[in-house]
Image (cartoon, rainbow, N blue to C red; front, side, top):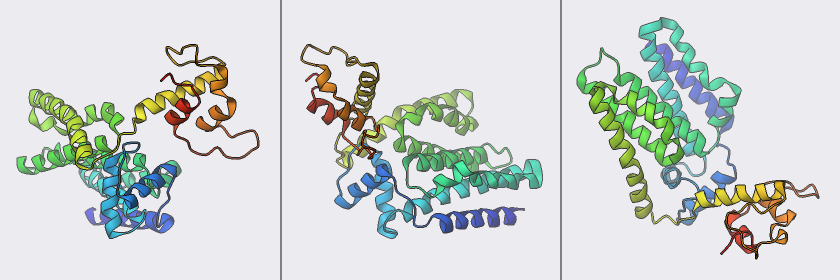
Length: 281
Protein backbone atom coordinates (compact mmCIF):
# COMPACT_ATOMS: atom_id res chain seq x y z
CA UNK A 1 0.00 0.00 0.00
CA UNK A 2 2.80 2.41 0.86
CA UNK A 3 4.43 1.79 -2.51
CA UNK A 4 1.17 2.53 -4.32
CA UNK A 5 0.68 5.76 -2.36
CA UNK A 6 4.22 6.89 -3.13
CA UNK A 7 3.80 6.06 -6.82
CA UNK A 8 0.49 7.94 -7.11
CA UNK A 9 1.91 10.97 -5.32
CA UNK A 10 4.92 10.96 -7.63
CA UNK A 11 2.66 10.71 -10.69
CA UNK A 12 0.53 13.59 -9.43
CA UNK A 13 3.62 15.70 -8.80
CA UNK A 14 4.95 14.97 -12.29
CA UNK A 15 1.57 15.63 -13.91
CA UNK A 16 1.34 19.10 -12.36
CA UNK A 17 4.85 20.01 -13.47
CA UNK A 18 4.18 18.74 -16.97
CA UNK A 19 0.94 20.72 -17.20
CA UNK A 20 2.22 24.01 -15.82
CA UNK A 21 6.02 24.12 -16.24
CA UNK A 22 7.75 26.52 -15.77
CA UNK A 23 4.87 28.07 -13.81
CA UNK A 24 2.62 31.10 -14.06
CA UNK A 25 3.11 34.59 -12.68
CA UNK A 26 0.51 37.17 -11.71
CA UNK A 27 1.10 40.88 -10.98
CA UNK A 28 1.94 40.12 -7.32
CA UNK A 29 4.54 37.47 -8.07
CA UNK A 30 5.91 39.56 -10.95
CA UNK A 31 6.78 42.33 -8.49
CA UNK A 32 8.32 39.82 -6.12
CA UNK A 33 10.52 38.56 -8.94
CA UNK A 34 11.64 42.14 -9.57
CA UNK A 35 12.62 42.40 -5.91
CA UNK A 36 14.68 39.23 -6.21
CA UNK A 37 16.48 40.49 -9.30
CA UNK A 38 17.01 43.90 -7.70
CA UNK A 39 18.05 42.35 -4.36
CA UNK A 40 15.82 44.81 -2.52
CA UNK A 41 12.83 43.56 -0.53
CA UNK A 42 9.72 45.37 0.66
CA UNK A 43 6.77 44.24 2.76
CA UNK A 44 3.98 44.84 0.23
CA UNK A 45 4.08 41.08 -0.35
CA UNK A 46 5.53 38.55 2.07
CA UNK A 47 9.33 39.03 2.29
CA UNK A 48 9.58 35.44 3.52
CA UNK A 49 8.11 34.10 0.29
CA UNK A 50 10.42 36.37 -1.69
CA UNK A 51 13.36 35.02 0.32
CA UNK A 52 12.31 31.41 -0.31
CA UNK A 53 11.89 32.19 -4.00
CA UNK A 54 15.33 33.80 -4.14
CA UNK A 55 16.82 30.56 -2.78
CA UNK A 56 15.05 28.42 -5.36
CA UNK A 57 15.94 30.99 -8.02
CA UNK A 58 19.63 30.28 -7.49
CA UNK A 59 18.97 26.62 -8.32
CA UNK A 60 16.21 26.93 -10.93
CA UNK A 61 15.92 30.47 -12.35
CA UNK A 62 12.40 31.85 -12.70
CA UNK A 63 9.12 30.56 -11.27
CA UNK A 64 9.81 26.84 -11.69
CA UNK A 65 11.60 26.48 -8.35
CA UNK A 66 8.62 27.75 -6.37
CA UNK A 67 6.21 25.51 -8.29
CA UNK A 68 8.44 22.50 -7.54
CA UNK A 69 8.68 23.43 -3.84
CA UNK A 70 4.93 23.98 -3.46
CA UNK A 71 4.13 20.68 -5.13
CA UNK A 72 6.74 18.77 -3.15
CA UNK A 73 5.07 20.03 0.02
CA UNK A 74 1.51 19.38 -1.22
CA UNK A 75 2.04 15.92 -2.67
CA UNK A 76 4.45 14.90 0.09
CA UNK A 77 1.95 15.96 2.76
CA UNK A 78 -0.90 14.14 1.03
CA UNK A 79 1.23 11.01 0.76
CA UNK A 80 1.95 11.19 4.51
CA UNK A 81 -1.74 11.60 5.28
CA UNK A 82 -2.74 8.78 2.96
CA UNK A 83 -0.11 6.45 4.45
CA UNK A 84 -1.28 7.25 7.98
CA UNK A 85 -4.95 6.96 7.05
CA UNK A 86 -4.37 3.62 5.32
CA UNK A 87 -3.94 2.01 8.74
CA UNK A 88 -7.44 3.16 9.62
CA UNK A 89 -9.46 2.88 6.40
CA UNK A 90 -7.32 0.67 4.18
CA UNK A 91 -7.20 1.22 0.42
CA UNK A 92 -9.75 4.03 0.60
CA UNK A 93 -6.91 6.25 1.83
CA UNK A 94 -5.57 6.65 -1.72
CA UNK A 95 -8.57 8.89 -2.46
CA UNK A 96 -6.81 11.59 -0.47
CA UNK A 97 -4.37 11.90 -3.36
CA UNK A 98 -7.19 12.95 -5.68
CA UNK A 99 -7.77 16.19 -3.76
CA UNK A 100 -5.41 18.42 -5.81
CA UNK A 101 -7.00 17.26 -9.08
CA UNK A 102 -10.21 19.24 -8.50
CA UNK A 103 -10.23 22.13 -11.02
CA UNK A 104 -10.27 24.91 -8.46
CA UNK A 105 -7.23 23.45 -6.72
CA UNK A 106 -5.27 22.08 -9.65
CA UNK A 107 -5.17 25.49 -11.32
CA UNK A 108 -3.26 27.05 -8.43
CA UNK A 109 -0.64 24.33 -8.15
CA UNK A 110 1.16 25.77 -11.17
CA UNK A 111 0.98 29.40 -10.01
CA UNK A 112 3.60 31.33 -8.10
CA UNK A 113 1.43 33.01 -5.51
CA UNK A 114 1.58 33.49 -1.76
CA UNK A 115 -1.79 31.81 -1.27
CA UNK A 116 -0.58 28.69 -3.08
CA UNK A 117 2.56 28.60 -0.93
CA UNK A 118 0.44 29.23 2.16
CA UNK A 119 -1.69 26.17 1.39
CA UNK A 120 1.47 24.10 0.91
CA UNK A 121 2.90 25.13 4.31
CA UNK A 122 -0.44 24.58 6.06
CA UNK A 123 -0.98 21.16 4.50
CA UNK A 124 2.55 20.10 5.42
CA UNK A 125 2.01 21.31 8.99
CA UNK A 126 -1.24 19.35 9.29
CA UNK A 127 0.30 16.20 7.85
CA UNK A 128 3.16 16.38 10.35
CA UNK A 129 0.69 17.05 13.18
CA UNK A 130 -1.38 14.05 12.11
CA UNK A 131 1.69 11.81 12.17
CA UNK A 132 2.76 13.31 15.49
CA UNK A 133 -0.54 12.29 17.05
CA UNK A 134 -0.12 8.66 15.99
CA UNK A 135 -0.30 6.68 19.25
CA UNK A 136 1.76 3.85 17.75
CA UNK A 137 4.80 6.09 17.16
CA UNK A 138 7.61 6.34 19.70
CA UNK A 139 7.86 9.52 21.83
CA UNK A 140 11.00 10.62 19.96
CA UNK A 141 9.35 10.22 16.56
CA UNK A 142 6.26 12.08 17.73
CA UNK A 143 8.47 14.90 18.98
CA UNK A 144 10.15 15.21 15.57
CA UNK A 145 6.78 15.40 13.82
CA UNK A 146 5.57 17.97 16.34
CA UNK A 147 8.61 20.20 15.82
CA UNK A 148 8.20 19.98 12.04
CA UNK A 149 4.51 20.87 12.32
CA UNK A 150 5.35 23.99 14.34
CA UNK A 151 8.06 25.03 11.89
CA UNK A 152 5.70 24.67 8.93
CA UNK A 153 3.08 26.67 10.85
CA UNK A 154 5.66 29.41 11.39
CA UNK A 155 6.43 29.41 7.65
CA UNK A 156 2.70 29.78 6.96
CA UNK A 157 2.52 32.81 9.27
CA UNK A 158 5.54 34.43 7.63
CA UNK A 159 3.95 33.84 4.22
CA UNK A 160 0.63 35.44 5.20
CA UNK A 161 0.27 36.88 8.69
CA UNK A 162 -3.54 37.01 8.69
CA UNK A 163 -3.59 33.20 8.67
CA UNK A 164 -2.93 33.37 12.40
CA UNK A 165 -6.60 32.67 13.18
CA UNK A 166 -6.44 29.38 11.27
CA UNK A 167 -3.15 28.52 12.93
CA UNK A 168 -4.62 28.43 16.43
CA UNK A 169 -6.53 25.11 16.01
CA UNK A 170 -3.67 23.71 13.93
CA UNK A 171 -1.14 24.50 16.65
CA UNK A 172 -3.44 23.06 19.30
CA UNK A 173 -3.62 19.81 17.36
CA UNK A 174 0.10 19.76 16.57
CA UNK A 175 1.11 20.15 20.22
CA UNK A 176 -1.55 17.84 21.63
CA UNK A 177 0.99 15.15 22.63
CA UNK A 178 2.35 17.57 25.25
CA UNK A 179 -0.79 17.32 27.37
CA UNK A 180 -3.56 19.89 27.83
CA UNK A 181 -1.70 22.49 29.89
CA UNK A 182 1.58 22.30 27.99
CA UNK A 183 -0.29 22.37 24.69
CA UNK A 184 -1.86 25.73 25.51
CA UNK A 185 1.49 27.06 26.72
CA UNK A 186 3.18 25.91 23.52
CA UNK A 187 0.49 27.53 21.37
CA UNK A 188 0.70 30.82 23.27
CA UNK A 189 4.49 30.74 23.00
CA UNK A 190 4.33 30.18 19.24
CA UNK A 191 1.77 32.95 18.76
CA UNK A 192 4.00 35.34 20.70
CA UNK A 193 7.17 34.32 18.88
CA UNK A 194 5.73 34.56 15.35
CA UNK A 195 5.62 38.39 15.16
CA UNK A 196 9.10 38.44 16.69
CA UNK A 197 10.43 36.15 13.98
CA UNK A 198 8.79 38.40 11.38
CA UNK A 199 10.40 41.52 12.85
CA UNK A 200 13.85 39.89 12.96
CA UNK A 201 13.42 38.67 9.40
CA UNK A 202 12.55 42.16 8.17
CA UNK A 203 15.52 43.67 9.96
CA UNK A 204 17.99 41.07 8.67
CA UNK A 205 16.72 41.42 5.10
CA UNK A 206 16.53 45.22 5.41
CA UNK A 207 12.92 45.13 4.23
CA UNK A 208 11.52 48.46 3.07
CA UNK A 209 8.22 49.30 4.81
CA UNK A 210 5.35 49.97 2.38
CA UNK A 211 2.55 49.94 4.97
CA UNK A 212 0.23 47.60 3.03
CA UNK A 213 -2.37 47.61 5.81
CA UNK A 214 -2.83 51.38 5.61
CA UNK A 215 -2.86 51.22 1.83
CA UNK A 216 -5.63 48.61 1.79
CA UNK A 217 -7.75 50.77 4.11
CA UNK A 218 -7.22 53.75 1.82
CA UNK A 219 -8.07 51.59 -1.18
CA UNK A 220 -11.40 50.63 0.36
CA UNK A 221 -12.22 54.18 1.46
CA UNK A 222 -11.54 55.42 -2.06
CA UNK A 223 -13.92 52.81 -3.46
CA UNK A 224 -16.63 53.66 -0.90
CA UNK A 225 -16.25 57.35 -1.65
CA UNK A 226 -16.70 56.69 -5.35
CA UNK A 227 -19.74 54.44 -5.08
CA UNK A 228 -21.52 56.45 -2.35
CA UNK A 229 -20.69 59.85 -3.77
CA UNK A 230 -19.41 61.20 -0.43
CA UNK A 231 -16.00 61.57 1.16
CA UNK A 232 -15.58 58.52 3.37
CA UNK A 233 -12.19 59.36 4.90
CA UNK A 234 -12.37 59.91 8.67
CA UNK A 235 -11.75 63.50 9.68
CA UNK A 236 -11.80 64.77 6.11
CA UNK A 237 -11.49 68.55 6.34
CA UNK A 238 -12.76 71.30 4.06
CA UNK A 239 -9.72 70.94 1.82
CA UNK A 240 -11.04 67.59 0.59
CA UNK A 241 -13.49 68.10 -2.26
CA UNK A 242 -15.34 65.95 -4.76
CA UNK A 243 -12.74 67.01 -7.30
CA UNK A 244 -10.14 65.27 -5.15
CA UNK A 245 -11.96 62.01 -5.84
CA UNK A 246 -12.34 62.29 -9.58
CA UNK A 247 -13.84 59.25 -11.28
CA UNK A 248 -10.77 58.43 -13.39
CA UNK A 249 -8.61 58.22 -10.24
CA UNK A 250 -11.06 56.04 -8.34
CA UNK A 251 -11.67 53.82 -11.35
CA UNK A 252 -7.94 53.28 -11.67
CA UNK A 253 -7.31 52.60 -7.98
CA UNK A 254 -10.30 50.32 -7.52
CA UNK A 255 -9.46 48.19 -10.55
CA UNK A 256 -12.59 49.33 -12.44
CA UNK A 257 -11.92 49.44 -16.20
CA UNK A 258 -12.01 53.01 -17.55
CA UNK A 259 -14.85 54.05 -19.87
CA UNK A 260 -12.75 53.59 -23.01
CA UNK A 261 -12.73 49.84 -22.44
CA UNK A 262 -9.03 49.61 -21.61
CA UNK A 263 -7.64 47.87 -18.58
CA UNK A 264 -6.81 49.89 -15.48
CA UNK A 265 -3.09 49.67 -14.59
CA UNK A 266 -1.99 48.75 -11.09
CA UNK A 267 -1.44 51.81 -8.89
CA UNK A 268 -0.04 52.72 -5.52
CA UNK A 269 -3.22 53.52 -3.64
CA UNK A 270 -1.73 55.64 -0.89
CA UNK A 271 0.43 57.78 -3.15
CA UNK A 272 -2.44 58.36 -5.58
CA UNK A 273 -4.80 59.23 -2.75
CA UNK A 274 -2.34 61.76 -1.36
CA UNK A 275 -1.57 63.12 -4.80
CA UNK A 276 -5.22 63.89 -5.51
CA UNK A 277 -5.98 65.29 -2.09
CA UNK A 278 -8.12 62.39 -0.91
CA UNK A 279 -6.05 61.80 2.22
CA UNK A 280 -5.53 64.54 4.75
CA UNK A 281 -1.84 65.26 5.16
